[in-house]
Length: 241
Image (cartoon, rainbow, N blue to C red; front, side, top):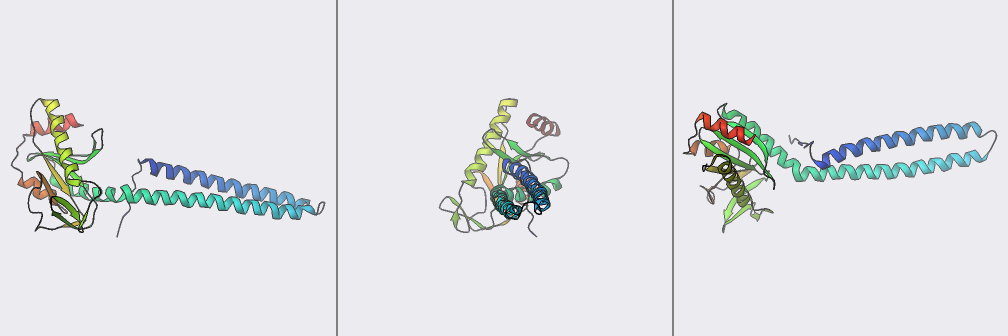
């Protein structure tokens, strides 16, 4: 079963909820106005036969008003669906990986959605085996690497995922250097929880970035030769939070 993850903090999600409430209120006002005007005209029919024409007139106005409101409502729903397909699938994939990361154990500290000022790092993992950034992609299908290009189902991606993941790991390494005055190596992981990795073309690091499918972070973390003490883990996490 596919679950639609709603990013309630996104602008479009908030706008959708606000507009939905507004359209509901407008419809209530329209129906209430129609009811009272209908009663008014019906009560006056015996005194003025033109009130019958008035009933048809206001009925027509209400009909067209509802058409307009329903059209705006459908547009609002369409915006929400488009918004889902831009961030919702990504949020779903991040939710999957986030649940998996919680199984690493209490010695590993997880920071999600870390803002860099130019974007965000989906997950930062700090633990005894080092520091890791995880970029999560919701792409489905076969993930391969040909002619120095990452491909999804044989097609190039809109963004350069490898470069993005590398930039995030370098950003965090530089940030920690500024905070502590020492160089911490940060391992970048590009993870496709819904994808299938072509192990013929991807069987190790690419530009110092690990690339893998579901649960791949476990392999990359266990493979790491970096060692951090408990005190270092706590001080790094505290500085990032």
